[in-house]
Length: 201
Image (tube, rainbow, N blue to C red; front, top):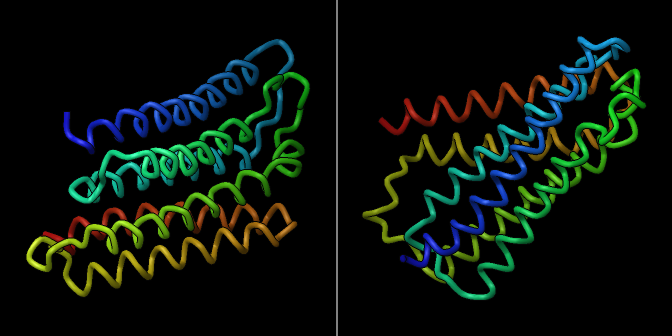
């Protein structure tokens, strides 16, 4: 077993649980929506769920791209546990545990969104710091970088834009602005991910 496989076993398990938590929330909400006491799901909570799943997916890809640099030691496992643990905790807060007690999910969003967005912000900053630490500890040879200047600009600029939008989501109170910002950051994550494939090929 390679060092990356050992670390990725922990990583993959926790990321999988976080994604399962979000999908389980969607499932419970849909069941109640069609039940005897229908609830109003709205746009905010589902958009937040989609955002978390897309961010988790990009984080998974970041780990794969850093596989040659990741070593299996206690510090690495603690860092992975911290970042992925934050993602998992954020994922558990997106949907209420007892959705039937929240007839309007927008009210739940108003109570929890800053914890979830703050968690995403902390996890993203942590992954950036981890990436920098990996590059210092085990630099990637220039021949293996494989990233053009356009790719670096796309990924770096996209990452900074995502961080800026997450900070804006922490500040904005209007539900309409929250919807607009959530849609924008989701579109940005999808756009950067897709554009990276074309720029890299």
